[in-house]
Image (cartoon, rainbow, N blue to C red):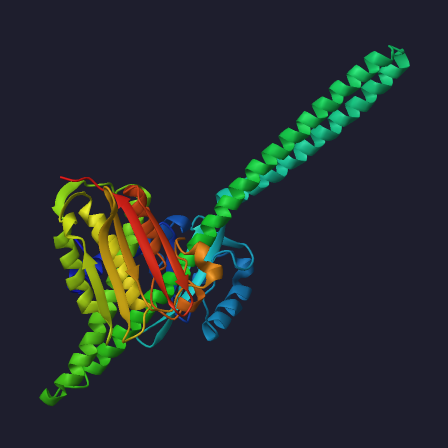
Length: 436
């Protein structure tokens, strides 16, 4: 079932958003400007050893050792006075205090929101005990390997001296020395190999943390903007009780509807990415009318066009009945056309075509007259959560093209593009299909 605007505004929609908060894999704690915990999810209770709802009402300093209380209060008050998003890994390592008195290392990412004229701080908490153990193990491993290499080198020198004293002959001495040097070289290579593997593991973890930070920063911004619009419009609607204020009410209702649709699109991107990551999306190959899918796409896009925008479209009638995955094909087209509309100005043209480029290969083209993609950033376009620097003021998650690329991987297709900043972009998609 797709998430509609009406669904998200219903009780079930609110329950869905609540479930996302409660079941998040990271600890999430929300405190007010006095440092009191007003919300906490299940994971945060597990991290600190508290039962259900025991964290509510506690001061956040209860979750850190006493020796840090004074400094933390000062830091917290400073953050409330001058709040800003702080990604994961920024600042010093922190220590958490569990209910049973034990401590553990953690990282905290901070964000903030305004709700009911009250400033709230949102903390995303990650237990880094495993990483600290790996770092300690790496240090211990390096020490042991360096000692081993030193001991081996010492033994080589001692053995060489013994051979010289025993006067076993030049050939014997050279042979023994070479063997020892080879053993030392092999040992050092093993040391370097082990160190390389551990560094790769740490680099992978760093990459995941950076990806998590980009997600938290993006989600905080993209959710805050439509929620602020909904709240302000809802307050303004209440100020127009008279019948002749209907036009003003409709204006703000439309703002609420558009904001909820933006939230729906964000959630749909998240759900699509989660399904792709978990392998829940697989090909559903059926025979269907591509012409009907094309008509549905055109009907949906007509409602999304900006003032004065026009779509010049064409469809190859030979492709009416095909065998492929209609859901993936439709979503690929909707995503590319939505981007073309979003990143193009009013009174501009968009070209859209579906045709057979060669036998049993479908080609889809979408060309716009929009802001274009900076040349230096084009190689990063299909990365998760990546958005070009000239698109930061336009709402989006940075997931759409990554999802399109992965859909095409399932279809055994490919995507390429040409773009020039300020002049527009053209995307070309190719994928094989079967004929009835």
